[in-house]
Length: 119
Image (cartoon, rainbow, N blue to C red; front, side):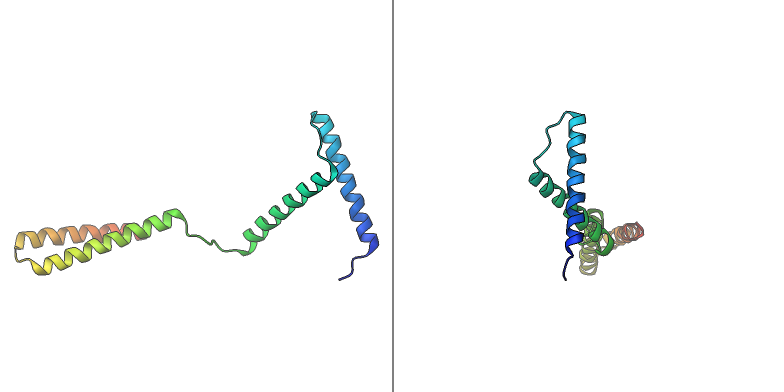
C-alpha cells in the first residue's frame, strides 16, 4: 500500500501541532517538556497500549478464569470428594447409628453443593 506524500505531510504537521500544544501545556504547568523524539515515542507507546486494550475489550473473551469461579469449583470438588469417601465408608461399616450420621452429612454436603452451584 502506497502512502501519499500529502497524507504524510498532513500527519507530520498534526504531530508538530500536538507537540507544540504539549509544550504550551507544560509551560502553563511549569513542567520541563520532553524532547520531540521522546515525546513522540511516548505518544506512540500510549496509543499502542490504548489500541491493545480496545481491541482486547472488543474481541477477546476472558482468558483466565476469575478467582471466584476457581474457588467455587474447588469447594464443590472438595465436597464431592468428601461425599464419595463417606459413601465408601457407609458401604463398609455395619453400625446403623454411624450410617444414619453419614447419611445426614451426605445430605448436608448435597445442600452445600446445590448452594454453590446457585451462586
